[in-house]
Picture (tube, rainbow, N blue to C red):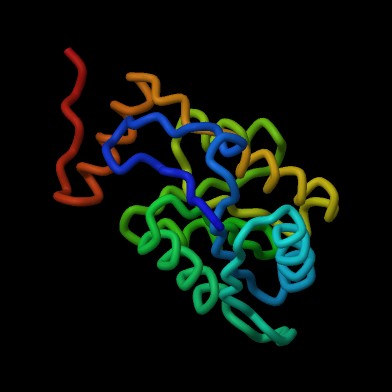
Length: 179
């Protein structure tokens, strides 16, 4: 049986650590530059007991376009509360940008264990983006592991900031200026 991590149905709702909630449903997508890393991560995630939804690509094509696969991974996460996502490309930048176009997605580019952890802990990110050309397979796998096992802190200041971004995304309301 798979349980999914509650990403916070209400803004600021703290999530229980993954080790208390069980395995996570993970949506993963890449482009040609991330194809091999994606396949490695699909196997690794399954080996860790996670439920994986592979959004492609399913064959290597040097001319493919990351939005085709990364938008599907982000849509999967957005439509499946509690799930998490991984998007992969050469640098991870375009993949993060594409994922962030999907309403309800907070995608973060991870380039270290610390950035992977802080994405979840402070920003309640639900998608991590990895640059396959920027990191070894071992490092990239570790970033994903850290991302999946770090819970949102739920602290008031981080919840407030997320609410401001969500208000802008939903209704276009800019946060009030201080003072």
